[in-house]
Length: 303
Image 1: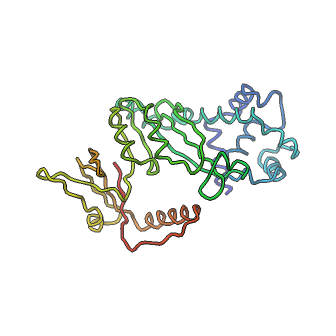
Image 2: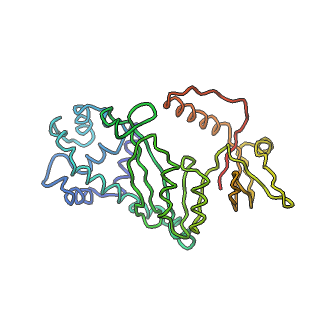
C-alpha cells in the first residue's frame, strides 16, 4: 500500500507541479486565499485509493491529511471543502490529465498520427451510490452510477463524458455515439462495447476499430463461393498456450460483417484463471450463481 501511494504521488508531481494545481484551484475558485489544505493534498485525498472515499469518516480523512501532508484540519473544516468549486477543480484536472500524459506517449503518438485522424479510446467505470439516488441511478442489485469517458490520444481532448445508470448498456451507448466518428478515426474499445451494428456504423463512416470478439459469435470463411463456419475451438486445441494465429478476410455473425484481419490466441493457464476469477466476481456482483462449463475454450480473439 505504501509503495502504491508513493508511486501515485510521483506520477501526480510528474504531470502537475504544486504551482500548477494551485493555479487551477484559484481559477475555479476552490482556493481563494492561502489555506492549510493545499490543492495537491485535496487531489490526493479524492483521487487515490480504492474508490471508498464516500465510505470513510471525515475524522479518518483528516487523519490521512495530517499523516501524508502535515495538514491540520477539523472534520467540519474538511466537510465544508466538498463544494461545487471543488468539483470544478477536479474536473479541470481530469480534463488536463490526458494532455499532460501525451509527452510520455509521444513516440507512439507520432507513429500513428500519419495513419489516423484520432485514436479514440472509450471506456466506462461503475460504482455504488446511496439508496437515495436509486430512482435516477439504478444498478443490477442496488443503486449504482456509470461514467462513460472517451478521449483522443493524439490531441488529449475529451470527446465524451456521460453519467448514467450502472445497468445501462455500454454497447447501446457506443451505438448512439456513432455520429461523432470521423473518417480515419481508430476506435479502441473493450468487449463490453461490442455489437455488430456498431462495427458496421464505424466501417460506414470510413473509420477503423480494434476490439475483442464475443465468444458466441460465429466466424465464416468463404471458400469456393461457399460459406464455411470456422471451428475456432478445434483450432484453439491445436495451439500452445500463448500461441497466436492471424487470419485475413473473414466474416462474423449472421449479417456476414467483413473483417479484414482477425487474431486468434490461446490464453495461458494464468490468464485463463484470471479471466474465470473476473467472471465469477461479476456474476456475484449481479447476484447470479456461476457454474463452470466443461468446455476448454481458453481462447481469445481480437481484430
